[in-house]
Picture 1 (cartoon, rainbow, N blue to C red):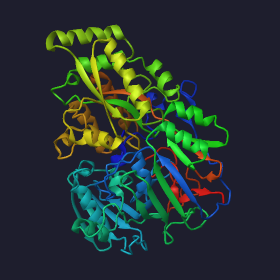
Picture 2: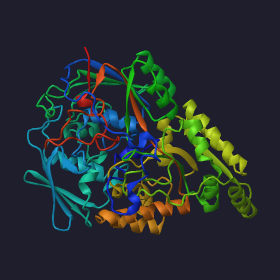
Picture 3: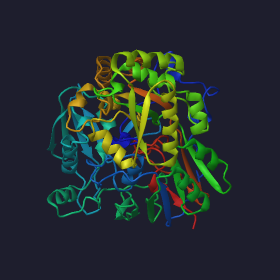
Picture 4: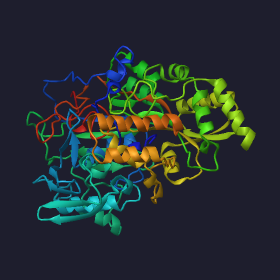
Length: 558
């Protein structure tokens, strides 16, 4: 969490929309990373079956592997997807399809959904995947302190024959999209019951996925997954999946360490969103790389806590001053090698809600100083505590922000914690003021509701971290939840983005670019060969909703 973000595996922005402004920046105005394609250089190549890979990931973020309790950043989602399958997944056009589900059918007003499980699938412990398994898992989502905010409209889940019937308190046309992320991960009901009873370990997950759990070291985050010989899905050519015998996930929190490890050949592949190391790895001899496009990716930002009434960030003038104080062009070049597009809102180019100009404040230190002076005349000194991870690169970035804000009169202290603690603080600590963060990747803006709606601030575990309570945003989120499409969806998302720009609830920095760097022996990085049960190719750009490379179709030269 730099993205509890991924926590829910939900989030925003799909391709499409209808207004003149939703086409995004032109290719000439946008770094190549923002419009990178997803061509598969291994297309048509016969995969090698067997072998092992070691994958260096950025964080150890989950306290356990129960799907409804995982506090997940991106790294956690990657590990979880080896053992868990979701109920739905998006195809290459961003349209949602059944994965573990044979179908998801609504009634006329989308207040009742009938979920039919795909036949013949079993969990790793032999428990059948059926309607009762769906009911058990979704009931745990509905009652989960962590995930309840993602499914607040669900009133009841019952088994009727071979189906699970989900009743809502109001129409929810986009419900199946939520089942492609963490709320849709299916764990064995037998295992879940045993974990609750204390007779099974929450760190030894049991799902239906392409790999089974082998071992996990909670101390250093090393996770080993081995081939599920009875996996239910085949590739697009009818070959059994997965190809690999084993994947070892190795946590290396430093971007520099991961880049060095893959360059030396200590690991087979790694990921990074750090522009400096993206630039380095692209030029590294003997290393190949794949760049994910930003259109369905995350937004990097400084998350503020306007709901903290004891903090200066509760005052819109200070939030505006913080945004005005940052020279984003200089920051992007100095800290990101200019790799990622500078963000002006939560919706990147190519996504619903994107606008070339949202009105978000741009660099003007004189205007920032005037706002700080006005605030301090009424309230005394403006002081802010900024929290980020212990990674050396993130610390240096935090020091740059500290300098920008100090130059306009805001006194800033830095609080450095490990990434897992950063996530926990966002969820449980009401006193935080500002964070370095990533979030809001995905398919449709309706799935942003859990992060921004006033209603979610009243839950026992609030995923509206900044405690944003804004009638304009709430109204537009309702429009999106009611199933707005085309121009209507674009207009609602634009209105949300405009309101964020006006109130500066967050300080947007970049639309994140991710690079997968790997040895030349590793293949199918972007999901080649992975087809949905319908035969349609899966979405291969972005991280969430099972996107990006599919571990089931990764293979390595022997």
